[in-house]
Image: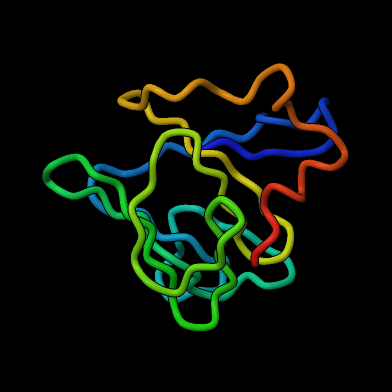
Length: 124
């Protein structure tokens, strides 16, 4: 997972590597600190988890009341993720999934991040 930011100086600076089976996302005040710790509006104490199944499929499982969007669609149940998927957690945390097993190209050229990139993430 890489963070996305409208500021080119900050874009893709943070990289989060997922654990082999389950990675938990949430705030640092959660019981048993999450693997990926985020702060800010809309981030729940325990926000979601990323689960890698035996067949190497990756699933995002949002927790109740946790604002989570994938490719601009608000999700409230388990969903498979693919290389290049755009994820919004809470109100301000934008990420893109980079999977070594994925074949989709990274966002480049006309798809590069610009000041209007948030439109690609907004939940519908």
